[in-house]
Image 1 (spheres, rainbow, N blue to C red):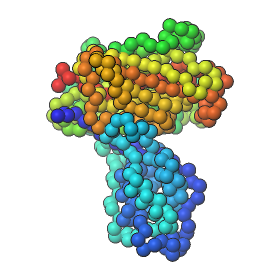
Image 2 (image 1 turned 120 degrees about the horizontal axis):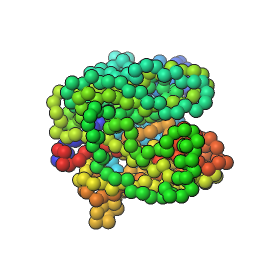
Image 3 (image 1 turned 90 degrees about the vertical axis):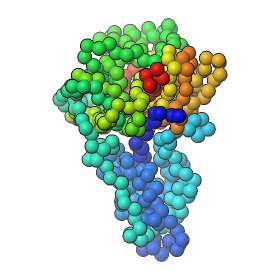
Length: 441
């Protein structure tokens, strides 16, 4: 029986590009057939379930889709994005794996939206409008039991490269806490590339992860020497192999969801913990002030299962200029009997595809996640419907493909080779992982 499962709050959908609205109110009323779907009876519930976590005031999307008056002008754009599969954003191959947080529309839901727009987007009987979902002010996880902010605001310059910044703030925990929900929020979202939040406990040795990184690829070649030389020129150490300033407890990146665990599982944060924010800022052309934070909701009781978070990466690569399909691999081997709950692939603007396979001790290969259309703007934790079983000795292979050619419209410099780097115009090969160790049950 599965004893742990956690659900990721739906991050919603991104901006619909407005090509044109539907016809005016009079035309809509005249053109709508008697049996056509209406906003109140058919469409609102679809939007409330799949879209409005982001498409509401104060969130990432540029317009709200909660009321009929807000939604109707975007009718044709909604239809186009839904028909193309761009919205809601979900990039995993349906043939590989099943996921709790999958956010595809069903065929019936897609047909309903299309038919509604084609009929002139009628409103319907207002008395039949379902209640709109409610959200805690500023937080998708509800009202946090604790909010930890950066100790002071950081002033992001208008231009130039900004090195990773680290900020430490106390939790003031006098006892260990079990965290059932966690959300990391940027104070100035347009200037924040990502945030990693770590728990650093006093006077304790950090537990090692339940896996070891296996060297693969170009780690002994020219790419390594060039990367390390450049780091020295900048006066910074070369990138460590997946280690941070504590235990990872939360992440924020474009399109990433907050985390909500089910009642029988939680994450342990020890007493006396300091939260360390690693923040990657990107200049936007105007100065900005950021004071990011992390919110936590506590469990009233110790859980049946402790969930842990980790990360692994391969910083040793060089993608040739103009190369449209360059592969980079990373490999870890599990040192304990482990269950895997979610994987989080991360590259920058040249990343195009990810594939993950488990290689079991008997040699059997098991594809577990395929992301053929990776999108930097929607970085998703893929949560498995059933946890993956990884006995001790199992290996997890993570392969990413990159497009460094001029055909990639997002490519900032197709004429140059690219290596690991912190900035968006450089590249990464990073995987986040959530898991439990069976011996800790």
